Length: 390
Image 1 (tube, rainbow, N blue to C red):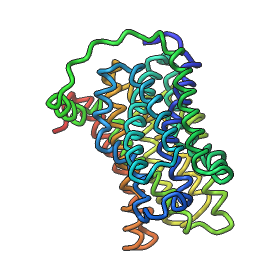
Image 2 (tube, rainbow, N blue to C red):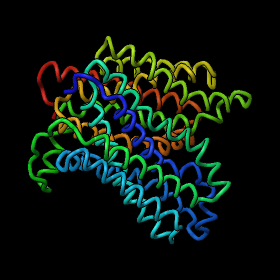
Image 3 (cartoon, helix red, strand yellow):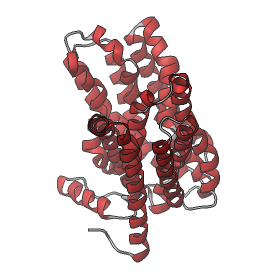
């Protein structure tokens, strides 16, 4: 455990996280431009966005186990170089089948980064600073998507899609070179058991039966289910005058609250308690939106409440789990559940809206927030009693 925080290395790891989030988001921000590159692909173009998340659903926990066994520095650097190579290949605009294959490889690179980087950040942070450093890590998706919207999309519009992919390749390579030097001295890692299919299955059971390892991931499932689906389906319910400013302000509000109030609370309260408050306040905000549909202040209150969940969920991993290997397992489970939540949230919400109308948004999202709170309360009770959920 570090006695002082290596902030330069923490920010370098966060920068690597931005590159990993861009692996997920670079296709999203230019999705309307992809038919020009692959006019014959039709509806299959959606796989260029979803494949990275699909890999995370299937292999999230496996990534945590693999990263722990091959060591965090090695896994992170290999993933960054793989990500740079894949983006460079994409800049050549290969055929659609080859582009799909490259997205599968990119999903593996993405998973290794989002498991190894927060595990390393926890190792390099003094206990008193972990609230800040892991909350900072929790902003990587929102910051990366904002950067892609502000810089990546204009680059693609001006110079074409290959320019965006090439820029991403250079960014990933730069992160790899910086971290190759800065991560030379790390805490000694304990030896890991042999890697085998029976061990993988056993570890899955161990993780998801543990109220310590599984708790951050269980809450993260309900957070990602709600966050992505809300931002996707909310705009039509906002007044046209407020729609653009509110949708731009919501993710920024979430990040700002996470980095200010969230960090302050984490210095005084356990991370799980902050997450529970975030879920409870988010559910209340959805009730406000049910009573006052599209109210701008209610939307911002919701974003603020979700900001408490965002950073504290990552901070809960080292608080609940001692040792880098256990933290990697918990981060792998978070990657798996986060990708699952991202993938199922919007389709379920869209089906609900088509079936029962506007009330589906507060009912489904509010219900998800309440379930997140209940799951955390049940797992906290299991930890206090020493029971292992079946």
